[in-house]
Amino acid sequence: MGSEFGVIMRSEIEEIPSVFKRIRASAEEMTSQIHMLPLSNIDSVILVARGTSDNAALYLKYLIETKLGIPCGLASPSVVSIYGTTLRFKNVLVIALSQSGQSPDLIGYCQAARDGGATVLAMTNDSASPLARISHCHLYLQAGPERAVAATKSYSAELLVARTFVSAWSGESINFDPIIEQTQKVLELTSEIEDIASRFNYHNGVTTMGRGYAYANAQECALKIQETLKIPVASFSSADYLHGPISSLHEDSHVVFLAPFGIAEAAMSATVQRIREITKHIYWIGAGFARKPDEIYLGGAIDLSEVDAVIVDSVILQLFALFLAVSAGKNPDAPVGLLKVTKTV
Image (cartoon, rainbow, N blue to C red; front, side, top):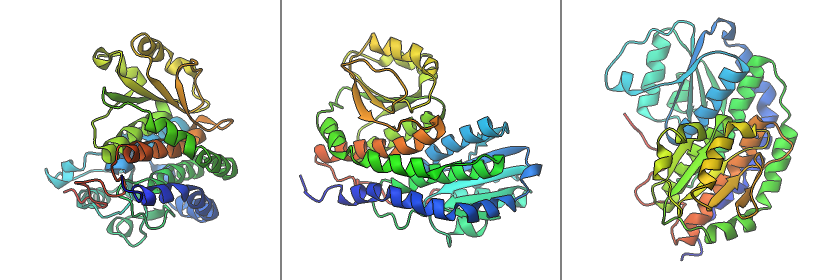
């Protein structure tokens, strides 16, 4: 096993508190930009993203619908890039999330949306990117250069910038300090997470699961493990899981629940109970659910709202994926077959 495996990914995860501090420092400027948008005229929101950013978009979707009551959907960029549709987007806000801001299908969709009357906002890690340039408003993720192929600090940054955006729109205040403080505390769990990952048997199937705001992290946890460990991982809403997929679960299956502090246990209790009847291999990211003594706890934020705990917990899933890959002798910094910037059309 190469001693250098995962060094870059780990260092970028460790940067996340500093990224959050930069977002906090830029929050007032971001809020001023957001308030210049014609948000009072917006009737619906469309989110456009790919990969990791698509998972961050799920979190933003829940924020917009719960905090603002405005319908919010996920775009299908191929509507424009493949089918050449002319969009009619009056009173629509289109929000693009992208680490690089370079994917041609996202750029083409946003340009078509703008031509069709939409207001376009971009959240990227490159203020000079094509996506940033064609948008009415650009919110910089403040993540700095990200070299590891598997996105980590940019995902967490997208969550916090999304939180900042919706807070500015809704008029809700956001306290960055406890988010930053608890993210720093989570990093103190690194050796414990590494030990758990070294003993995790992924050969009999892995499923990640969450609901509500945590569904974004469940999807991202599955993606990170797939990218770095190179195995298939299933991810579900805990509600959807009972509608068929649970039939594939067996006694050797490993399930990772994403359950942030503040989540209502009733949202997941029926699914958790059924899974406990089938397998004992249950792991938890997040402090929002009563665990049995034989279930493994990887850590989680405490005493935060659910929407903020999800942001902190994103760091835990990244560390878990990192150490799963390294313990298997794989280099998560440069997974075979993947590029840092993927330009889909």
